[in-house]
Length: 226
Image 1 (tube, rainbow, N blue to C red):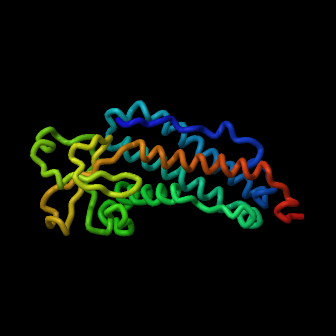
Image 2: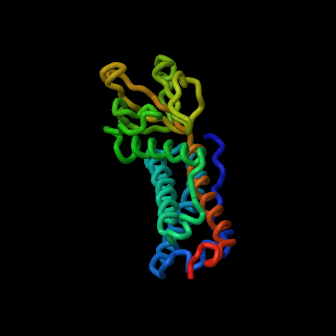
Image 3: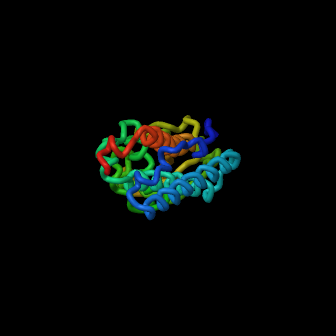
Protein backbone atom coordinates (compact mmCIF):
# COMPACT_ATOMS: atom_id res chain seq x y z
CA UNK A 1 0.00 0.00 0.00
CA UNK A 2 1.16 3.51 -0.76
CA UNK A 3 1.77 6.10 1.92
CA UNK A 4 -1.69 6.94 3.30
CA UNK A 5 -1.51 9.60 6.00
CA UNK A 6 -4.14 9.93 8.70
CA UNK A 7 -6.62 12.70 8.07
CA UNK A 8 -6.79 15.70 10.37
CA UNK A 9 -10.00 15.78 12.41
CA UNK A 10 -12.06 18.92 13.06
CA UNK A 11 -11.28 19.20 16.77
CA UNK A 12 -9.03 22.23 16.23
CA UNK A 13 -11.72 24.42 14.68
CA UNK A 14 -12.06 27.68 16.58
CA UNK A 15 -14.96 30.09 16.96
CA UNK A 16 -15.19 31.22 13.34
CA UNK A 17 -17.42 28.60 11.83
CA UNK A 18 -19.41 28.40 15.07
CA UNK A 19 -20.75 31.97 14.87
CA UNK A 20 -24.50 31.65 14.56
CA UNK A 21 -25.09 34.90 12.67
CA UNK A 22 -23.03 33.79 9.65
CA UNK A 23 -25.69 31.22 8.76
CA UNK A 24 -28.66 33.58 8.77
CA UNK A 25 -31.00 31.37 10.80
CA UNK A 26 -31.00 28.85 13.62
CA UNK A 27 -32.06 26.12 11.20
CA UNK A 28 -29.07 26.71 8.94
CA UNK A 29 -26.74 26.91 11.92
CA UNK A 30 -28.10 23.56 13.11
CA UNK A 31 -27.67 22.16 9.61
CA UNK A 32 -24.06 23.34 9.50
CA UNK A 33 -23.42 21.46 12.76
CA UNK A 34 -24.90 18.32 11.20
CA UNK A 35 -22.62 18.67 8.17
CA UNK A 36 -19.55 19.16 10.37
CA UNK A 37 -20.48 16.11 12.41
CA UNK A 38 -20.87 14.11 9.19
CA UNK A 39 -17.39 15.18 8.11
CA UNK A 40 -15.84 14.32 11.47
CA UNK A 41 -17.46 10.88 11.62
CA UNK A 42 -16.29 10.16 8.07
CA UNK A 43 -12.75 11.25 9.00
CA UNK A 44 -12.78 8.86 11.95
CA UNK A 45 -14.02 6.01 9.76
CA UNK A 46 -11.42 6.67 7.06
CA UNK A 47 -8.62 6.77 9.63
CA UNK A 48 -9.88 3.53 11.15
CA UNK A 49 -9.81 1.90 7.71
CA UNK A 50 -6.14 2.58 7.03
CA UNK A 51 -4.93 -0.60 8.75
CA UNK A 52 -7.27 -2.65 6.52
CA UNK A 53 -5.91 -1.26 3.27
CA UNK A 54 -2.89 -3.55 3.01
CA UNK A 55 -5.20 -6.27 1.68
CA UNK A 56 -8.44 -4.45 0.86
CA UNK A 57 -11.59 -6.27 -0.14
CA UNK A 58 -13.97 -4.91 -2.76
CA UNK A 59 -16.23 -3.77 0.09
CA UNK A 60 -13.44 -1.74 1.72
CA UNK A 61 -12.46 -0.09 -1.56
CA UNK A 62 -16.02 1.02 -2.22
CA UNK A 63 -16.46 2.06 1.42
CA UNK A 64 -13.45 4.40 1.22
CA UNK A 65 -14.81 5.99 -1.96
CA UNK A 66 -18.23 6.49 -0.35
CA UNK A 67 -16.74 8.07 2.79
CA UNK A 68 -14.63 10.50 0.77
CA UNK A 69 -17.77 11.36 -1.20
CA UNK A 70 -19.66 12.13 2.00
CA UNK A 71 -16.90 14.52 3.07
CA UNK A 72 -16.89 16.27 -0.31
CA UNK A 73 -20.66 16.70 -0.34
CA UNK A 74 -20.85 17.89 3.27
CA UNK A 75 -18.12 20.50 2.81
CA UNK A 76 -19.70 21.79 -0.40
CA UNK A 77 -23.01 22.03 1.45
CA UNK A 78 -21.44 24.02 4.29
CA UNK A 79 -20.22 26.62 1.82
CA UNK A 80 -23.61 26.79 0.10
CA UNK A 81 -25.69 27.53 3.20
CA UNK A 82 -23.64 30.50 4.41
CA UNK A 83 -25.41 33.86 4.24
CA UNK A 84 -25.22 35.30 0.74
CA UNK A 85 -23.58 38.47 2.07
CA UNK A 86 -20.71 36.40 3.45
CA UNK A 87 -20.30 34.36 0.28
CA UNK A 88 -20.14 37.58 -1.74
CA UNK A 89 -17.77 39.29 0.71
CA UNK A 90 -15.29 36.42 0.94
CA UNK A 91 -15.45 35.74 -2.83
CA UNK A 92 -14.61 32.09 -2.21
CA UNK A 93 -13.37 30.18 -5.23
CA UNK A 94 -11.70 26.80 -5.61
CA UNK A 95 -8.02 26.90 -6.55
CA UNK A 96 -6.66 24.76 -9.38
CA UNK A 97 -5.46 22.03 -7.02
CA UNK A 98 -8.93 21.61 -5.52
CA UNK A 99 -10.68 21.78 -8.90
CA UNK A 100 -8.47 18.99 -10.22
CA UNK A 101 -9.02 16.86 -7.12
CA UNK A 102 -12.79 17.28 -7.44
CA UNK A 103 -12.73 16.23 -11.09
CA UNK A 104 -10.63 13.18 -10.28
CA UNK A 105 -12.92 12.11 -7.47
CA UNK A 106 -16.12 12.64 -9.44
CA UNK A 107 -14.67 10.47 -12.20
CA UNK A 108 -13.65 7.55 -9.99
CA UNK A 109 -16.83 7.68 -7.89
CA UNK A 110 -18.97 7.65 -11.00
CA UNK A 111 -16.95 4.85 -12.59
CA UNK A 112 -16.73 2.56 -9.57
CA UNK A 113 -19.83 3.31 -7.49
CA UNK A 114 -22.50 5.33 -9.28
CA UNK A 115 -22.41 4.49 -13.00
CA UNK A 116 -19.91 1.68 -13.66
CA UNK A 117 -21.58 0.73 -16.93
CA UNK A 118 -22.20 4.20 -18.33
CA UNK A 119 -19.72 6.80 -17.09
CA UNK A 120 -19.40 9.30 -19.93
CA UNK A 121 -18.75 12.78 -18.53
CA UNK A 122 -15.11 12.52 -17.49
CA UNK A 123 -13.10 12.51 -20.71
CA UNK A 124 -10.00 13.92 -19.02
CA UNK A 125 -9.83 10.65 -17.06
CA UNK A 126 -10.51 8.38 -20.01
CA UNK A 127 -14.16 7.91 -19.10
CA UNK A 128 -16.07 9.09 -22.13
CA UNK A 129 -18.63 6.29 -22.25
CA UNK A 130 -16.37 3.68 -23.83
CA UNK A 131 -14.96 2.03 -20.71
CA UNK A 132 -17.16 0.01 -18.38
CA UNK A 133 -16.06 -1.16 -14.93
CA UNK A 134 -16.89 -4.81 -14.27
CA UNK A 135 -14.85 -5.58 -11.17
CA UNK A 136 -12.64 -4.12 -8.43
CA UNK A 137 -9.80 -6.18 -6.96
CA UNK A 138 -6.75 -5.62 -4.80
CA UNK A 139 -4.52 -7.51 -7.23
CA UNK A 140 -4.40 -9.59 -10.38
CA UNK A 141 -3.09 -13.13 -10.69
CA UNK A 142 0.60 -13.71 -11.36
CA UNK A 143 -0.37 -15.33 -14.66
CA UNK A 144 -2.22 -12.19 -15.74
CA UNK A 145 0.73 -9.97 -14.87
CA UNK A 146 3.12 -12.22 -16.79
CA UNK A 147 1.21 -12.52 -20.05
CA UNK A 148 -0.96 -9.43 -20.41
CA UNK A 149 0.30 -6.85 -22.89
CA UNK A 150 1.71 -3.69 -21.26
CA UNK A 151 -0.80 -1.63 -23.24
CA UNK A 152 -3.59 -3.31 -21.26
CA UNK A 153 -2.44 -1.56 -18.08
CA UNK A 154 -3.46 1.98 -17.16
CA UNK A 155 -2.93 4.17 -14.10
CA UNK A 156 -5.55 6.61 -12.80
CA UNK A 157 -4.13 9.58 -10.89
CA UNK A 158 -5.22 13.07 -9.96
CA UNK A 159 -3.97 14.43 -13.27
CA UNK A 160 -5.52 11.85 -15.58
CA UNK A 161 -5.36 8.34 -17.01
CA UNK A 162 -1.86 7.15 -17.95
CA UNK A 163 -0.85 4.32 -20.26
CA UNK A 164 1.68 1.47 -20.00
CA UNK A 165 1.34 1.07 -16.23
CA UNK A 166 1.99 -2.65 -15.96
CA UNK A 167 4.95 -2.19 -13.62
CA UNK A 168 3.46 0.65 -11.57
CA UNK A 169 2.72 -0.06 -7.91
CA UNK A 170 -0.92 0.40 -6.91
CA UNK A 171 -3.33 -0.41 -4.09
CA UNK A 172 -6.23 -1.76 -6.14
CA UNK A 173 -7.18 -2.46 -9.73
CA UNK A 174 -10.30 -1.75 -11.76
CA UNK A 175 -11.13 -4.43 -14.32
CA UNK A 176 -12.64 -2.74 -17.37
CA UNK A 177 -13.78 -3.46 -20.90
CA UNK A 178 -13.46 -1.19 -23.93
CA UNK A 179 -15.71 -1.25 -26.97
CA UNK A 180 -13.43 0.96 -29.06
CA UNK A 181 -10.18 -0.86 -28.41
CA UNK A 182 -11.19 -4.50 -28.85
CA UNK A 183 -15.01 -4.78 -28.85
CA UNK A 184 -14.90 -5.76 -25.16
CA UNK A 185 -13.02 -9.00 -25.83
CA UNK A 186 -10.27 -8.57 -23.25
CA UNK A 187 -9.82 -6.95 -19.87
CA UNK A 188 -7.99 -3.69 -19.41
CA UNK A 189 -6.61 -2.95 -15.94
CA UNK A 190 -6.64 0.46 -14.26
CA UNK A 191 -4.38 0.90 -11.26
CA UNK A 192 -5.46 3.24 -8.43
CA UNK A 193 -3.91 4.34 -5.13
CA UNK A 194 -5.71 5.05 -1.86
CA UNK A 195 -3.36 7.97 -1.19
CA UNK A 196 -5.05 9.94 -3.99
CA UNK A 197 -8.49 9.36 -2.45
CA UNK A 198 -7.31 10.37 1.02
CA UNK A 199 -5.66 13.44 -0.49
CA UNK A 200 -9.03 14.53 -1.90
CA UNK A 201 -10.55 14.20 1.58
CA UNK A 202 -7.71 16.17 3.19
CA UNK A 203 -8.14 19.03 0.73
CA UNK A 204 -11.79 19.25 1.72
CA UNK A 205 -10.86 19.27 5.41
CA UNK A 206 -8.36 22.05 4.67
CA UNK A 207 -11.23 24.02 3.09
CA UNK A 208 -13.12 23.91 6.39
CA UNK A 209 -10.10 25.14 8.34
CA UNK A 210 -9.49 27.91 5.79
CA UNK A 211 -13.13 28.99 6.07
CA UNK A 212 -12.98 28.92 9.86
CA UNK A 213 -9.92 31.19 9.81
CA UNK A 214 -11.63 33.73 7.54
CA UNK A 215 -14.80 33.70 9.60
CA UNK A 216 -12.91 34.30 12.84
CA UNK A 217 -11.85 37.71 11.54
CA UNK A 218 -15.26 38.58 10.15
CA UNK A 219 -17.72 40.99 11.75
CA UNK A 220 -21.23 42.00 10.80
CA UNK A 221 -19.97 45.52 10.17
CA UNK A 222 -17.39 44.33 7.63
CA UNK A 223 -20.02 42.39 5.72
CA UNK A 224 -22.63 45.14 5.94
CA UNK A 225 -25.13 43.25 8.07
CA UNK A 226 -27.16 45.30 10.55
